[in-house]
Length: 411
Image (cartoon, rainbow, N blue to C red; front, side, top):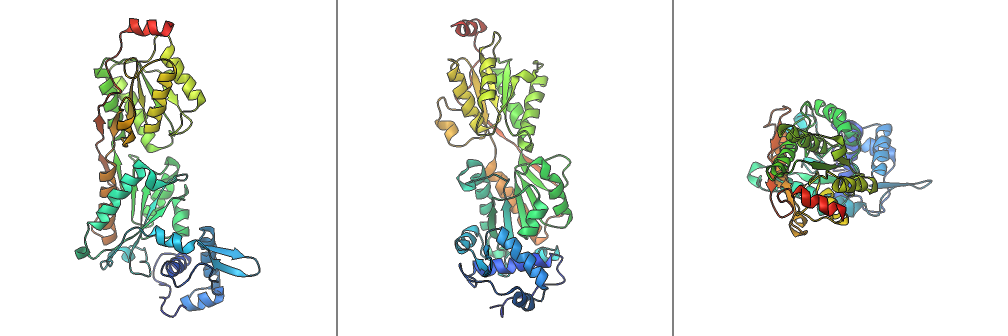
């Protein structure tokens, strides 16, 4: 079985157990090991690949933890029944051969097929990523960058989705080694492990998040500038009491949008109050407590006349809350969202929102990753921030006359 399989490269800094994982994973992917097949004895694998039995054991444990293999007490280790379809469906792009030099020279061993393996790592809890407007547009940009690179450049990539990413990217790399990794919207608590992985020489790009002091290359949208543009739009329409609806403040994007909201209010010399900032349970659900707080702001004696919702689903929830209090959008309360999926144009009234250049962000990340893999881009922590765009639709209008608002609140 292992006659044509290359032995472990003992000169490669990639841990040997990680190289064993990669070889076995590729054997499943290409059909040498099929669902239900029993994995050869650890000693046999160790002799065939030129490593210790302990190294093989560590690799098998990691592959079992990832779901590729299953262990049965008293019988041995087997390829999981769904392993072949999972391995096949993970490969989403690819076609040519790695140009000489780059990836292995920097410490990432090429896959046995000769193609570098590029992993897209999502935050823990991300589900149905390709059904999401946010993730799917990032993915399309990455995929197009890889495809349009062209066979004349002699580079191919196996593009793998990894929606089970943990907070510790060092542990993920140890469990599932990659030649390059694009980390999509990581949380702030992951920054130290991301920087450590970069310092080990791994090709990395952080996409959809950035921190000014992070020593890793990144591609992001201007979340601060987008939030400021939203508030400026409302201020130009005469609004002075503007509420913020936010969630998941541990993410870089949300932190930046909060900063942009506060900075724009300060720049317009408008009063800031923490009571106007409504923090929700989740980015897709406002929650009962936050809904009550927002409803109180809308119906108090000096009510807010506009809402900046720092996420698309938060904007939809905010519009529903406005209606539940007997008010109208935009006649009584203007609403601005953040992100611009198709549904933003289909809701009533059509949502004024901030559009992130998601496709272009993904494309830039893909292009930069290719250059890293080839050794054409220096290992500098360049932070690339693309501008966001205000999309003015029907959910915003001039601030209402205070007298009419007061009369409505007395009804």
